[in-house]
Structures are given as structure tokens and as C-alpha cells.
Image (cartoon, rainbow, N blue to C red; front, side):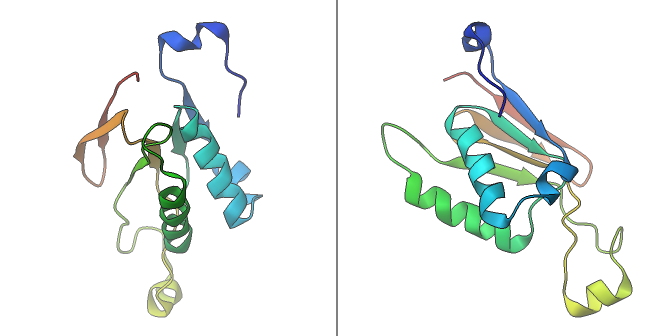
Length: 128
């Protein structure tokens, strides 16, 4: 993650993580990268989302790290998966789901989803 600058307390840092960077990481490395950023108060945006198993593991790990005074958890929003947009017939037949979807993750006490549909995620982000 980028180093925090002294002036960064005036705003909210947004980390945009490319699909190619995430592709080179194992599942737990992805989860750690995301949670480390969110614990610092950053909003993390993934160009390509996590697999359903990775999302479940992210939520599971988050639940073990929640503490009343330190970390309130995460808010996660992804575009809904299109039924046929980027999946082959074989993928749909085998029940494999595409992870190519924008995902927004942030501290639960700083991000509130206002609207979500298949083309737009609208969120209100506040400072601590």
C-alpha cells in the first residue's frame, strides 16, 4: 500500500488495485492486502472482484479482527454478476462464477451504500 503523507488526514485515501496485481497473489495475500488497507481507514477498490470463496474468507477473517475500539469491520459492495456476460457455457454448466466485477471495500464506520445496481455503486464516504 502507498505510504501515508502528513496531509492525508484531511481526506479519505482510495486504493485502486488492478486485476493484474491481484492475479499474482494467493487468496490469503489478497485478503491481507485488502484488510490492511481498510484497517488504515482506506477505501479499497478492486478492478476485478474476489471469488465467492475469497469473499467468504474475507468476511470470516474480518469477523475475527473486529474490536469495539479499534476496528468496526468492513462494508463490501460488488456489481451483481451478469448471467452470461463473460462466462462460457462450460463455466455456467460447472457452476463457476466470473470474478470480473468492480468491488468497493471500506471501513464499516466510514462507508454507506446509497444505491447499487448492475451499472452503478453509489456510496457515501465519511472521515472518521
